[in-house]
Length: 135
Image (cartoon, rainbow, N blue to C red; front, side, top):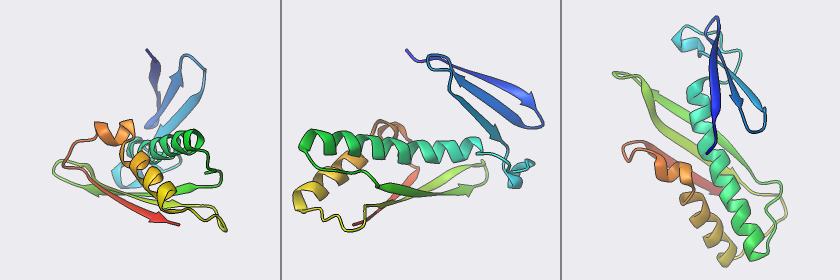
């Protein structure tokens, strides 16, 4: 089981340490919630984790089925709501390498992998997830 230590370091900054690897992440409150926006906010990481998970599972699928995915990237936008303050929608634009042609088989595998990632499966059904694939 993975453990992460999260510590408040002051001025609305938080540091998270992945105890197995020692990897660090720091966050700041967003400008629209009393922060300086100097770092990822916790809700930025929330939205980013969905995109990173999708690309990871897509990469596993590509490796297992023998096609390349290197150079693929995601652009993520989060839409906030209030009362209560929360992420209402995550928009993920998935882009694929220029000059790479994916056939119908590869596209089906890519799209199924993106939709089946563990983060996507863990999100509340009321959270709107908009996925756009740009081949």
